[in-house]
Length: 66
Image (cartoon, rainbow, N blue to C red; front, side, top):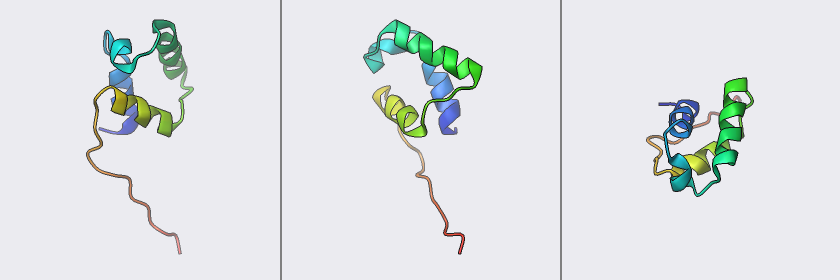
């Protein structure tokens, strides 16, 4: 699953604020931003996914355009 898909699933998991050690209001703010299409940075998504117990299946790879 892609990062945004995993983040969406994780953030909508009931009680996830305990695993993330976040206040409910902060999590609600992230949910609202997600619904509005205002995403947080990919780095922050990855950090929160790791704190929730998710792991990276494959790393991102980049190619040089030259």
